[in-house]
Picture 1 (cartoon, rainbow, N blue to C red):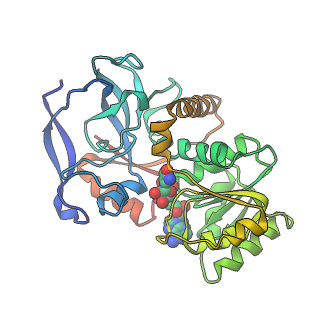
Picture 2 (picture 1 turned 90 degrees about the vertical axis):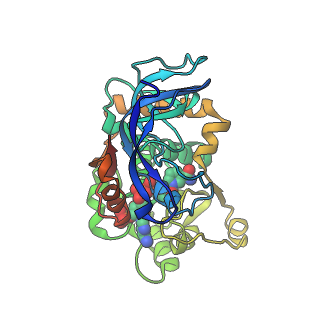
Length: 334
Ligand SMILES: NC(=O)c1ccc[n+]([C@@H]2O[C@H](COP(=O)([O-])OP(=O)(O)OC[C@H]3O[C@@H](n4cnc5c(N)ncnc54)[C@H](OP(=O)(O)O)[C@@H]3O)[C@@H](O)[C@H]2O)c1
């Protein structure tokens, strides 16, 4: 099928939806080290929106097809590839190209799916469970009994972090939500308490509430997808020798930090960039997905593939994420 026509979303200019269209392209041929995947579902990621706006730190060359981490079936493999074979069901961590009928991905970043995990659930997993796992395990060195604070808990990475923290033995899981009425959906995923991350004086209100619900202890581990004023409050809510991991800035502001905080409180602030982990430590990602797939097979994780849009309605998918109206993962289905 390589060389035959396929349909793909193409971005011809940054930050201009009128310059995005579904086009016919030749289906690519996998080169050494590559796999061609017939896409069954592609998650609409927050980072896809940022990249399409031209605001991501890595800008793809135009025109390009957005879509990180689609899932599907291996349709062809490059000459030297033996990690997967034609017909395998996979999660394919391509940087771009998922909003299409076929997508190329590095073979080394392609993960065979267990039979028990459907394509939509796997698409919900993509770029969320791997990110949350690395944040908790590698960056924050989560210990059994730790009190964990997840900020942006209703999002894709947040829902994953809540469930993984619980499954990995956290003593308490506190979630940061934009309003209290979002707490019940997270309680069902294993959260114990919540802190509201909206309103004025977040610097004080987040610290006060976290101290209140943790009996004055604070959070041993913080996973922060929000940044901005939320980060400013969260730093003050970290327990002695606690670890805060910066994952994203969904509030729109990259925060700054006075380094007297880490010094005076004996705390660590670190960052996570999952793409780098995939490239530099692929064996850690293999380990991560083996563990996450095992939890999924045991029924320990609840996936939330909420809305699936056909490729032609890519703009509705982006709008569902942008408007913050989706209650689960938004997908595109070719
Ligand atoms: N570093 C990495 O390797 C990596 C990997 C994956 C993702 N990320 C980043 O992590 C962040 C979250 O990604 P995601 O996929 O989980 O996104 P998502 O599914 O769109 O979720 C966004 C989350 O942020 C919350 N939020 C957005 N604006 C907010 C505001 N002004 N105040 C309070 N809460 C707000 C949302 O709350 P509501 O539900 O109330 O709207 C939701 O919980 C993004 O910045 C993304 O780029 C980084």
